[in-house]
Length: 485
Image (spheres, rainbow, N blue to C red):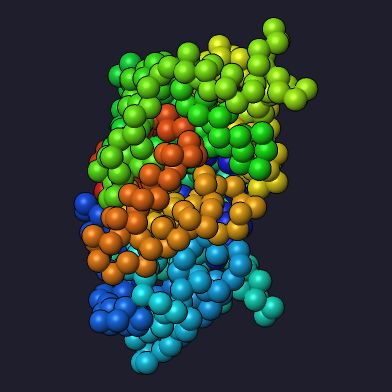
């Protein structure tokens, strides 16, 4: 398998490692099954107290880590204590909600919560940071040394550019049908596609592992040796604004919305493999909200800018002696979820130029891209929803609540109150009401521009049989795969 990014260490309790290797090695208490149903993982059952403040887990017996250390409640508590309450994990509400981890028995784990939080179990399906590793995977100082989990694959060897995993023949569940998986880093997208067509690799795809652009997917689909697989179009691609810069002017955000022809952008940029978006979350995701009215109307965009004092000067627009220029930050590699970022940026810049908005496209490496977002060194940036398609809570916590300095969509007291009202609601009606009111604020403030609902795209070579498109980037499952060479 090809990977677009170099490998960091594989500590499941930080974010340096690969999102695809982690779920092969580390497991969680619960996991998603068919249709978004929560199923047992390392916990065989769980009981939520009537007041929602306590959750008791019965842990799976007979499970061992790859170093033969038994998995039990003490090992589970040790793992949770490594990340719960840590600032680096505050994007995950579970990190702030869990106030105590207790061990009532050798195979019993109890979580005590600060307040009732129904999405907690969904958050515990994430591999990072809720994945479990052997307590012997760290040195005497607590520093991570080796990836030792309970999963169906053992990490045999890893460098910055390659990784080897072998089947865990002692796995408690259904064992993989293949005995080995090799990953190699190939940063260039065209090189990865050529390697697949030449039979040098067997699989590409995902939002982060080895992204396939819509153009590449269309090309690969014409190759009889390759099978291209599309998941549901449940990821929303959008333009986000830096509200602390010039885009803090609502007139500019509204003008950008009217200036973009989302239907045409989607058809051209996604080669018919995505749908024009009108909401923050794709239809079918719980509490996605009603479609917004987002007409393509460049004349209205011009009128809005004129009324706000941004007058045409022959070079663009100017107000109080300041030229209207927006910086659009994009990652220079294809190793991101929004494929074809250069083409997308050029299309956006061209459309905005028609209404007098100048866009400077700034392409930087992926690490710098995320650093720039956190530092506020952008006016526009492509963003995407993430997480399981069954539950929006993970995304809204990160992008609509928390530190105002962190990148997001619209972090205000009003939206945070509504989102928290949804997250901590104990009934579906209250949850839906709060979410819909939050979405109405985002629409009123032109907080972002939804562009497309896109699928996860994978391509496999002729030897690969039985592969199923993962629903997320952190439940990568090869248990159904066979190789017929």
